[in-house]
Image (tube, rainbow, N blue to C red; front, top):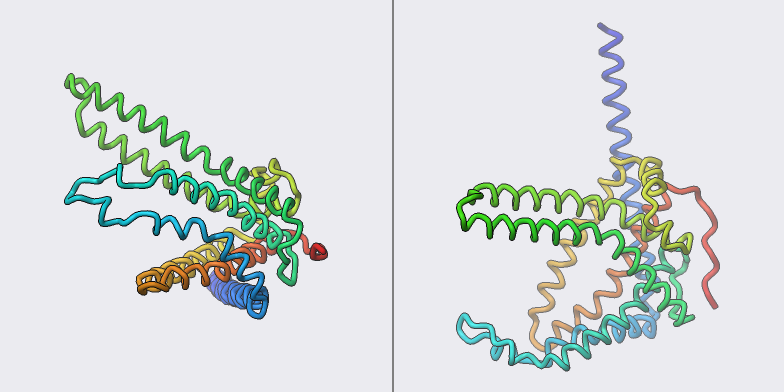
Length: 290
């Protein structure tokens, strides 16, 4: 009995130590990520300006129409939207976003200090490849959603002839939403590391190789990984709150959000990079591009 008590006490003590180590490790990762983003932008005003210019088209969409003319009472006036201007700005925003994504790929590769905006063609290609990796991860979500919505529609049409009770349709929709939630969690857990794995290997196929990503997660520990994601989720919520407050400031609110976005982008990219390194053999980071 004394032996069992001792083993249980040792287990609790070791669990407590592991928990403290996890907290300290995440604290170091947060501190390093903040310092990395600060070093990347503070004093590097040209780099910060490039980030802002690349994100500018999406921010300008709000100025091509007056929201007051869109809504007439409870009626949405689609004709009041200048679709041509919106399409041009959205198209420019999507194209320019690939350069930002390509820059993130360089951070994922472990470049330190933060890289410059050089090799624009490579940035663009890497950004497109990163988008493809994420598209492949998110694709099952859309497939299940479309198939589920189609099946729910068929059930709804059938219910008009009283062959399918409404409660059955409701239960099906709830199950569909739960399945989508499970798939979303899987996509987040594997997609983040898959994106970094793509950046390290240069292969889109490696970015969706589940077995290798699972090995990385097991190496760092599921508890460590989930805890780290919870922490970064809290950071994202805090950032969303701050930018929400900034956005309502008259005239300059949207500018302040544009200024804050690059810092957050680099911070998150560095955070995930350090997190990935916990589950991979440590290698020397590549030299910054010249």
